Image (cartoon, rainbow, N blue to C red; front, side):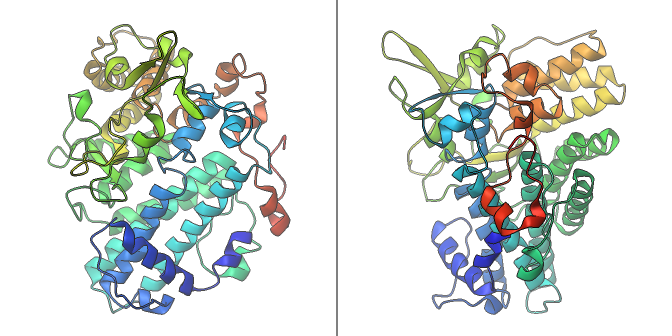
Length: 462
C-alpha cells in the first residue's frame, strides 16, 4: 500500500515517539537524544512511549478522535444524528449529503492514518518479540495493548470499507501488494488478536485514569465484535464476566457524572493532550451562539424522537437560540476550554454499551426477560419507565431506539447500528435525496487502488 512507502524503517517511528513525548499523554520520560528504531525497544520507557504514540494517534488524528474529522462527527453527519450548517462544499458537506467519492480527501486520510497506526502496532510487536531487555510483565502488557489496538483499528476499517487488508507485519514489500480479506477472514484475525490481548493484559489498570486498556476493556471490545458478527453466546459470556466485576466497575446513576474522568463506569478513555485540557468532543460539538457555522448540529428528527420524560434530552443536549431559531448540540461533554485540571476525558468504552450489547445477545438467545432487564438499566437512569411484556420484535426495536439515545455521537454507533440491522436505507432514503444502497460502505481511496491493484475491485457504486 502507498502509505507504507513512508514507513520503510523504525527510524520514523522513533521520530514519532519524540513528538508523542510532548503530549503528556502518558507519564513517560524520553531521552533527549534522537531515537533510532532499534533503540526504541531497549528499555521500558521508550517501548511504553511507542505504544503511547498509537493511543495519541487515535486521539489526535483518526477514527475515534473527537475532532471534526473523527467518526463521531463524520458518521453523525452521514446518518440521521447531525445536520450540517455551513457551505455547500468540502468534506463535512459531502458526508452530510452522501456525495462522498473515491477521491474524497478525508476518506484517504482515514485509510492512511489508520494503517500508519497499524504499522506502529506491528513495529511494537516485532520489536518486543524475543526481547530480553524489558521486564516480562511490562513486555506482556505492551504486547497486549498493541494487539488490542491493531484489532481495534482493523475493526473500524472493516466496518467503514468492508473487505480490507489485515496487516500483521512491517515488511513493506509484502504490505505494498497485500490484497483484501473477506469479512469472515477479518473476523478470525480480530478474534485472534483480541483473545491474545486478553491473555496478555492484566486485570488492573496501569493508572487510575484508565487511559491504557486492561483485560476487561479488551473483553468489552471483543463483546462488540462478537455481537456485530452474530455470535450471541460469546458476546453474552464476555458481558457477564465484565458486569460481574463490581470491584472494578460501578454503574453511574447520575447522567451528569457519566463522562467525568473519574467515572467508575468507564472501561477505557483517552486523556486530553494538555494538562488542564478537556476533550476534543467538547471543542467540536459545543457552540455558544447561533446560527451555527460549518459544524454539525443535532438533527430535528433526532430531538423529536426523545421520549417526553427522557432526562438525556435535558442533560446530554443543549439549546442555543438567536431569538428566532433554536439549535441543539450534544452536551455529554460540557467543557470546551482548559480548566485548572482536566475534568473530562474522551470515553471510548463504558458500561452502558455492555448492558445494551447483553440485552441484544440475550434477545437473540431467546431470553426476553433478561433482555428487557438490561434494556431497563439505561432507561431507568434516563428517567424512563420499565419496558415489560414485549414481543421479540418490539424488544429489538426498543434496543435500537435505546442505543440511539444512549450512545449518540459516540464513535458512529448509530450509523453502524443502522448498517448492521439493514435499516440504513429505510431510515435515510426519506431524508437523504442522494442516498444509494452502496453507501453502506465508503469507497476505497482512489490513490490506494492506483498504488496497489490487489485492492481491486472498488466497492460497488464508486
